[in-house]
Image (cartoon, rainbow, N blue to C red; front, top):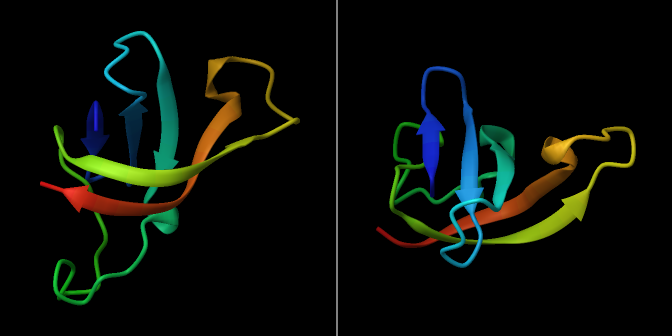
Length: 76
């Protein structure tokens, strides 16, 4: 995770350590894990390693076109 705004529910994932290559992530795409998110609120933290499906939104033409779907935390 590059950064995540818990109060807003979105952030950016940095691809493979490439600082200039970021993917948008929304809290609704974080896969539920009752052990990690016991209160039901899903969030990510800077520095976490995540897996995700990369998709493109054809309706958006800027750098936020690429989106992360089905996001899972794999390492804190």
